[in-house]
Length: 242
Image 1: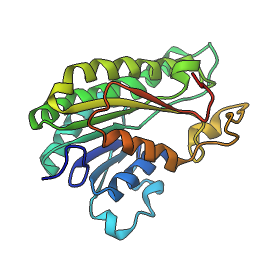
Image 2 (image 1 turned 120 degrees about the vertical axis):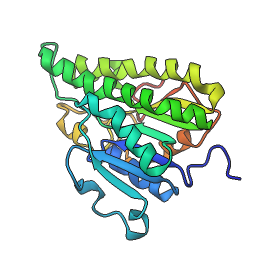
Image 3 (image 1 turned 90 degrees about the vertical axis):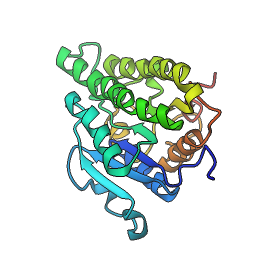
Image 4 (image 1 turned 180 degrees about the vertical axis):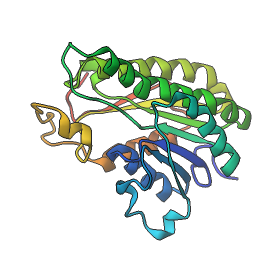
């Protein structure tokens, strides 16, 4: 019998597979033995093109737009139907156009739709199956901006801070059913489009940008720890030492 923390043989849904963090998490989960349903806004995400053939057999790529909220519950249902279960959910899709305090209302709404409402609807749809099976792992992707306000803008910071409340609300209600909910909050990770778009970037105290493998190694530690739930873990190179 496999341990409760294993992802071997489990099915994971990772959104935002066209981005740096999402694609890296897809690869790491495949390497750990999971079957991964990876979604992006377009077919054949370029960042997944180099996945080795020995892993590609457990990769299921699908087109999904997180702005299409009505399609998210059917997406979860399709994963459960096609793969028998949905055990690990990582909503990594994110949106963060740079603005000051003059954020247009449509930008504000779209950012919260993609960064907050879509992760919630995916979790809401996945939770009944997870709790019924007695196993589930949900990992939201937050940001240091939730603590500091960041440089992208109030729309982005607010959307990420709200994920923390969502994490706590889910974790407190599902821990007895074998389901954990946590969030990882990276800062200034190289190889991501978002960092490339941030103006006036200052290196963190560690003296360099974070690496994608550092994000994925922490994410996997969180996903495979059945005793960790309701937590937001910063990965920020010393920006916020407290």
